Amino acid sequence: MTEGEALQFYRDLPKVELHAHLNGSISTSTMKKLMAHKPHLDIQNGMTMIEKGQKRTLEECFQMFKIIHQITDTAEDILLVTKDVIKEFAADGVKYLELRSTPRDTSMGLTKRSYVETVLEGIKQCKEEDLDIDVRYLLSVDRRGGPTVAKETVKLAEEFYCSTNELVLGVDLSGDPSVGHGKDFVDSLSEARRSGLKLALHLSEIPNQEEETELLLAVPPDRIGHGTFLTASTNIVERVKQQNIPLELCITSNIKGQTVSAYDEHHFGFWYNLGHPFLLCTDDKGVFATDLSVEYEIAAKTFNLNPDCIWDLSIKGIDYIFASEGIKKNLKEKWMQLKPKLLRRAL
Ligand SMILES: CNc1ncnc2c1ncn2[C@@H]1O[C@H](COP(=O)(O)O)[C@@H](O)[C@H]1O
Ligand SMILES: [Zn+2]
Image (cartoon, rainbow, N blue to C red):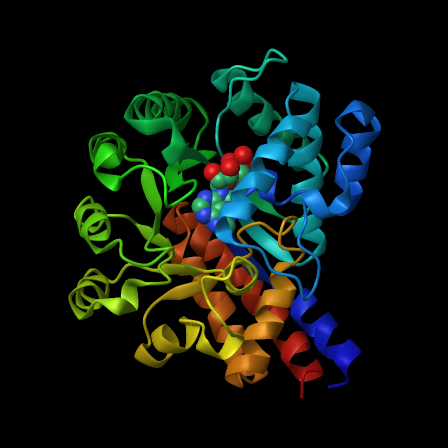
């Protein structure tokens, strides 16, 4: 395949995206639309996005989210961002998306509840446009909010889980990993789990979090985000293997946030060689200036994967979604319909 054909192959590859933070996924073109209404903020590209070849510390990345949150503080902003992000994932060949976002109270009148309602409205409006993408919502708990906010968010998630017919499926634990301690969230996360919500937890995104990771593994999570430093402890690796918990791996995010020093040192290699379940994800396609098709291409190039291996990676992702078995079956059928044409072209 030529370079151009390869890019088109990864774009046409049907994909599942399970780790995408809404406010981290805003594209440059959507950012321009938002900024047109907020010239007083005087925010330039480099303040909300890390260009190709550039890197930041993780701390700097979290500063960027603070800036982005100033730009998305009205219901109109959140509706626009939700719809644009969904359309962009659909255009990149994503057929099933679990979008995650932190319910937020803002000075512009949003409450945590109306925030969630607005995201759901965006999902609904996209559905009415007949895009070829199935979108679900996971409510994020930001570590910065501590146990009280976590409890509040879980309560909201439980309510919407009951009222939205499988649109809200779970809860995510995210936010700056250097802030707070996982033990503060064990109670609310366990409560969420008892209610039937699924859990996607960022674990060991930075080094030396063995104690917290062990505590959170006991909840247990249904999926692990990043897990970059899980491999530092053989005990923890054994537990993750034994519990067979799928990992959400975000290569560009880890490189640009500098928790992984080079592509070929990414923990993708470790888990791939073990045959452990995992899926490629974008994390924040806006902030890290990437796309899911680009993540597949990077993995293929770095770890020498042929189109058949890439296909297997993508279809296996269906097993790790939080929606029901019926949805998984339908998605697998969709994948199988697309397979012959796609792989014939890749020969
Ligand atoms: C880079 N690695 C990461 N690690 C942990 N949390 C992250 C993250 N990237 C994003 N977030 C979480 O997602 C929020 C932005 O989207 P929402 O406002 O929720 O839609 C960030 O404020 C942070 O809490
Ligand atoms: Zn994340």
